[in-house]
Image (cartoon, rainbow, N blue to C red; front, top):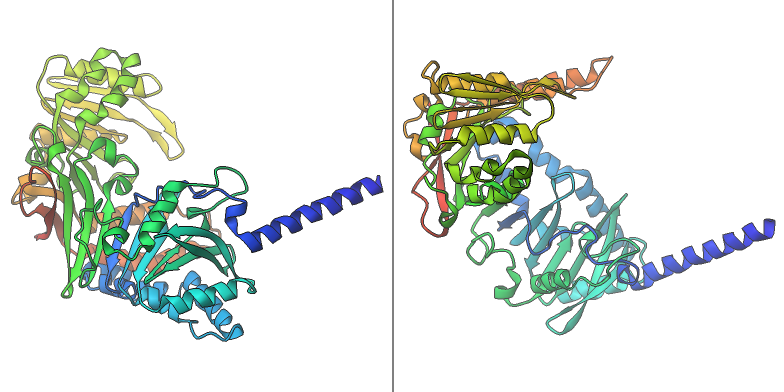
Length: 526
């Protein structure tokens, strides 16, 4: 028995030693698939093109609202956060022990030089993974020294190789903190850094050869500017580096993945910083606008007065056909035809007297016979529990009651004339119906030009909603430490936010037939 366990121990130790030897000698390629995070390296969720990434946090604070809410601690966080300090310390140690002079040079090269940073969302929805690409002369020395260090350092190793313009390029891994490893590769005047080894490599099983991922990295490392600006075209950005910063974010990320299916005409938001000020733009595909275009005036006339945040989106109603087709098997053929009965944009709004997780949605339908019956069938086919149907004049309501971790809710769908409204908060539905029936003030009453207004933000109402949600989600704290911290740090910033007037987002021009960036204006409403 003892001999059996001894043999197993010896074999297990030998296997571990072999794995570690392969890992140290040949890198991840010998034992791992490419891109284990399953990111689409060709399609990031956001892109930052900057003259200097180090200046971006401080330039953001030139916006008065951001300066009052985020304050200088925001800049301090990005300059002194754990990852950056760990990376700086690791590079300094490597430079000292191997008698090199690029301890801080690599960080300075990345943050203080013109760069492009693509970002991808993680499984939790946050923009956690990034690739930074820069052009810089004199990289040959860095590559040579990195290759030497990788053979004998405990924190740096060769992770694999790539083919770029016919050359073999080494990919290096750097462990800079507990559980933190980045990859970097250089070719010619190009340097690319990946925030996680799983963006190219991964676990011990699976496909080891992702040609598509390698092709993207090869383009990023190419010396030809027309090839290495891989992401500019899909964000419809001009070539080159701007004088300040450009930050573009796809609406599919902002909408938690629903944007492509439901409002594909609105493709991205963009923020540009130049000459000391920020400007906003929205990317719209005019060819995908539904009938009625992006004219939101009727929606604002149906929405209750003073929302905390309210946004209209150019819904792509035909894109809902696949979903409705699946629901139609239970709800009937009328459900499948619903997409053709809606027109124009839709609205999603949050109100301070409700909750963050119970917004109200409003859309407009063409007046056709049978629409209400199809709406009822749709509601019945998508909820659990008994559905009650009531008729009050020209208004029809469908309701059910459900128990959730947040408490009991009454999801309600209603149709009145051309207006269709839904919310998990029945009170918000009733408020919309009151506006439709001219019994309550509308959001349009406070808008000088509802047709061109895409969104509205009331900082006072938003701060009220944010404070309610923050304190509602605090865990049990017998000593009151968390509550005291929230009172000391969160409440003053929300109070600063509440002092700002209501703003509306206004398009400077109607959407063109093709895909183009349209300037947005942020106008204060007094």
